[in-house]
Image (cartoon, rainbow, N blue to C red; front, top):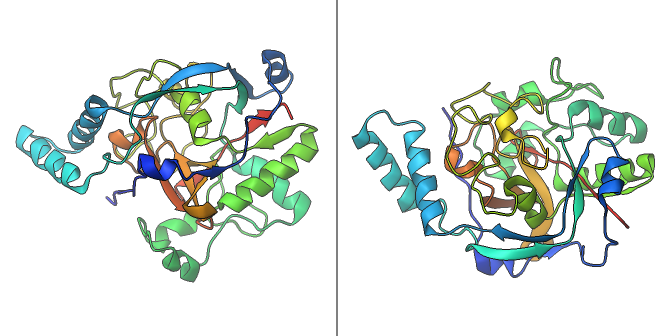
Length: 304
């Protein structure tokens, strides 16, 4: 089984974040969300973000327990993960305060994205073998990418309600802009902090369902299909706000850019990952041009 080892981002890097200014957006109301089917309201106020030593230690342990069988194997695996520092660069636990927002309850699906491609002629999801090799983070062989390639404007058979993948950050922004015009409202990608609050509520819970890992809670490496699943398949992965797939299936682009705008933060975890990566506090960054079978996105609706 191929396994994902993501490069984490330090708290210092977060201070250099380049993202859309959401502070000036008009306040969104529950009525605004109710008027747009498929969107859930997340109220303004404080929430606990980031992680502390206790949470990171737990992330190492459950990641080791996810695949090892004996206590000795668990200990050896955990030691190896700690040596690699998988979770050591997560931002420290702290209190953040956000305005209210409306977030789409589902990831953008292949069906959703197909309407955009057909209406605009925007490139279909995909990537050539050469471009895939050049990305440099080859978690999967190109043979595993091929089942997700579109044929013209047609998504792969049987994947209508699966999250769209093999799109870049720019593709996701273009979709949000087009959808804004279609629906007559303003959409954008969520910030990393908005995504985190929507996943973990206000009390700093590790997962949408609480602090204790549940093997059947989401689509991860040892539970569910080897690949994307239909959106909303795992009830435990629904946050308290009614937002689906907040702990698995695919990593999600945010609007939070780092490294001078050349990289984007992704939140959540993917269908081939370890339990520790599926916590709301975890995040990693990738070049904005990246296209991968592990990356998808959802929208927020703003009051602007």
